[in-house]
Length: 203
Image (cartoon, rainbow, N blue to C red; front, side, top):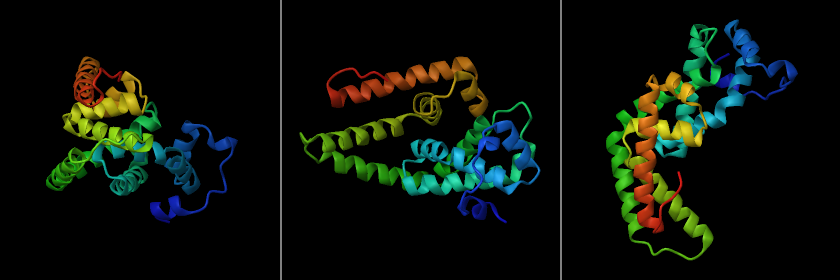
């Protein structure tokens, strides 16, 4: 059965024996389809969320998450015993997202420009829902304005709550670079958001 068949099949096996990542990895390495489906179900939402912050398109993020798990399914036998499953998966997701961003760069730039023009022409509504939507749009554009390394580090640390060590393993960056990129990303986002909020914003 292909990996998409695995993840689309109803889950009837979630139990105490599936709570251990080490056991899941070992069973998946042996070709246990239910073990890999458990891995998919455990990590699919955080992987989609992570990719979304890289590509800014929900449907594309879901598509790239599927590609991430296809690659993981094909290469799980290469996962080192000492490696963390989540770190390994996010590393694959990072590569998949980067490839997509590079191949769709021209299209993404056009979409971002049109969204920016649309937002700039709107009056800010006092309604909380509209304000929240507007702020999310401003935050999204501020994230898009960061260079790729800073956006990646910020997403992994702030949105995904990974440790510096995990981020280093996922990205291959040194700890000093990660801390520096995170500091600069926060400073840039704070500056951009302050123009909208009229005050410094904690990030």
